[in-house]
Structure formats: structure tokens, C-alpha cells
Amino acid sequence: MMVGERKRGRIRSLMETLKTENSVMTRLSWREWLPFFIAPFLIWSIYWLAFYPALMSPDAIWQWKQMTVMELNDVHPALHTLTIWLFTRLWFSPASVALFQITALSLVSGWGFTLIRRAGASLGVVMTSLCILCLHPANGYLIVTIWKTVIYSIFLLLLTLFILKLLLDRSWIKKRAVWFSMGLIIAAIPLYRHNGTLVAVLIWPWLLVVFRPVRVYIRKALVTALVVFGVIKFVLFPFLEVGPNIRRFVPLVHQMAAFIDNDIPFTGEERQLLNSFRSLKDKWNYNNYTVQTTMFREGRFDFEKLSSNQGEFLGIWWRAARRNPGILWNHQKVVTAFLWNIVLPEKRHLKTIIYRITENDEGLETESVLPPVRRWIMEITKYTHRRNLIWLVWRPPLYLYIAVLALGVFCLRMRSFKYLIMGAPVILNTISLLLSAPTSNFRYQYPLILTIPFLLAASSLKRDKLISGDESIYK
Image 1: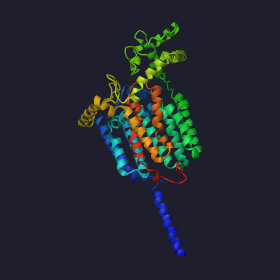
Image 2: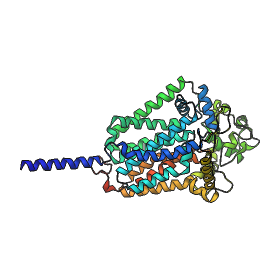
Image 3: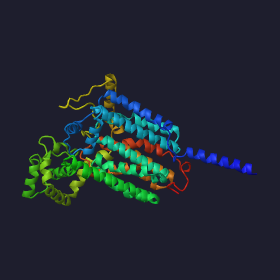
């Protein structure tokens, strides 16, 4: 009798062990995530060698110059410039930054796909999503481009996967390393892109509502984020004498150009001040699709002057916006069309990717290790930029609607709209762009492109295969 009870006890113990080892709650083994890491790492390394040492735009060259003399400003986030400085200490080449980006995204992707596979997604679904991630040309190009948007996008993807993990097992955040890491991730978001401030601010109430049973740990993560952000922004930056972001009013400058182009009345004093920023003779060279013509072409905008008269400028902008909401609405509708309108307007350019290091005085130039591969990749990429294909490959709205559909399916399969929070990072990023995008640029929605494969894979999960204990969100 006693022997039989012992045997049954051992069997129950063994079954519980097997159940636990197959649960999303257990620690991932390297054997599980390594294949999902190797595939993107190898494919993106081909891009790296083809466009060696990296791809760099004029913005990246400017940051490189700041980094070499350590005269920093926050026009392009200073933390990103410091990141470039950090990864060039051992290897003074843009290649070191590109290699870091490839490694970081491959690690995050490997963890994410392993997590979704453990949660019950079929191997076919996960492998299909992995192929989408690896083979989309945007990922190959951007991951070897020295842009702040790339690291920012990796952090948003990591936050998305953190949220998915909490949806599967909310007790996970009770670990100190987890809530502390979440705080670090969210603190990094506004430090790597200025529009990330809105994302970081609005994600907290959403997290606190959805994860109410563990809100004490969400608050710990919030405190961590505030402390880290404060130390970097208000201690480290002043110590390094980081200059201010004198271009923080770029979206408002673009809107002001719209008011000027529509000949709204200004007082003599207002016209004099606006003319001191940039000549009014050409109506600030307004182009409703981009602020570039106002800022840089045929007469540069004096942001130093604006910085010293920002209060007066904001007053003029507020009075113009209050009296002319129709002009403001039409302007925002056009400049943000690349976010919601799948069709590319006639004769309008959508900025996507770059193919080389821009000309510079720093001695940086493209030195492809695989020239034939580079030419082949560029030929395919240019083919995808044809008007009948660009909407499918490079136009962000298609991906936005796919993401909305995937999130809807995910919520329906989970029988709760709380699961919509998995898309919170890219949803909030899109909202921030609707308010502040200064030009039609594909890379602004790169977080969405990165997140799509994981949303698609997660939408295949079945509720009855997930954790059904007290720690699941729907319990």
C-alpha cells in the first residue's frame, strides 16, 4: 500500500517536472534559442560585409564628428552618440557599431521566437516569421546603418517581448532582474529617440491597468526608469557639457511654414521675428511632405536664433494654430500620409534606405568585402522601389494594418482585449509620429517592421495551450 503511494507520488512529481520544463515559465536553454539567433546573425552579416564597414548618412557623420572630439549635443540623441563612442573604443570603425547592432537584434530575436515557440506556436509558424524577419530587405540594410532609430527599434522590440512574457506569466516580473531590466529598457526609449518620450510616458498607465495584480513591481520598474533617465539626462549630460537639442521645435517650424505659405496675417513684430529665423520672401520654401526644404535648402533656418527666442515663437505658433485649425489639420494629414495611406502620392518621394557612406572629411568610405553581393542586393532593392512594388515592401501603412489585424486575432484567440498591450510600443510610437513626424521617412516606422513577425507568430497562439494557473493574465 505504502509502496504504491510512493510510486504514484513519484509519477506525479515526474509529470509536474515535465510540465514545468515545457512551460514558458522556465529558463530558456541555449540549445533552444541558438538556431533562432544564428539564422538572422548570418544573413545580416552578409549585408554587413557587402556594405562594410557600415552605412552612414550625413546625420551619422555629424555624430561621428561629435564623438571624435567629444563636443556633444542632443540634436541627435547624445546617448546614441555616446554609444557610438563606447563601441569604437576597442575597434575604431563604424563596423564595430554595425556588428553590435547585428548581435543585439539577433539575440533579442532568438529569445523572442523561442518564447513564442514554447508558448505553443507551431514550428512552421515560427520559421515563417523568422524568414520574414531575416529576408525583408529593410532589416538587412537598417541593421548595418548607424542611425539612432535602429537601437531605438531594438529596445521597442525588446519591450514588446517583455510584455508578451508577462502576458504568459505575470509572476516573472517579481524577479528583481526583470523589473529592473524593464525600467532600463523604458528609460532608454526616450534617450535614443526624442519622440520616444511619449511612448515612455504613456506605456506606464497601460502597464499598471493590465498588470494590476503585480503593479507593485511595475512601480518598481517605473522608479528605476525615472532614476536612470534622470541620472543620464540631468547628471551625465551636464557633466559632459552636452549641448541642447536646438531643433526640438522642428515639427512646429514645419507647421509655421504651412501658416506662412497660406498667407495668414501676422503683426509687424511677428513678421520681423519670423523673418529673422528665415527669410519670408519664399514663404520659408514650404513643402507639405517634408521640412527639409524649410530647414536646409535655399536658405538655412537659424535654429540658434529660434532657441534664444523660443517663448516668442511658441506664442506666435499658438495664436496661428488656434485661429487656423483647418490649415494645421491639412498639413498634418499630408505630412503623416506615409503612416496611414498605402498609396504613394504622385511625384512624392518616400525616403527609405541609403546605399553607402555619405561623402565626408572623416576618412570614412564604403569598402565592400563582397562587391558582387553588394551589387546584387542593390539591384533587387532598387527593383522593389518601383512604383508598383514600393507600397508592398517600403510603404509603412501596409505593415500598420497587418499589425492591427494580428493584434485583433491575438485578442480574439485569447478572449481578452487586454492582450492588445503587446502592440503598445508600436501603437504609441505611431501616435507620436502622427503628432511630430517632420518628413515622409520609412525608418521612422522601423520598430513596426521589426515587430510584425513576432505579432504574426503570437497571433497563432491558442489560449488553452498557455499557462492556466493563477499567474496567467486571464485567470
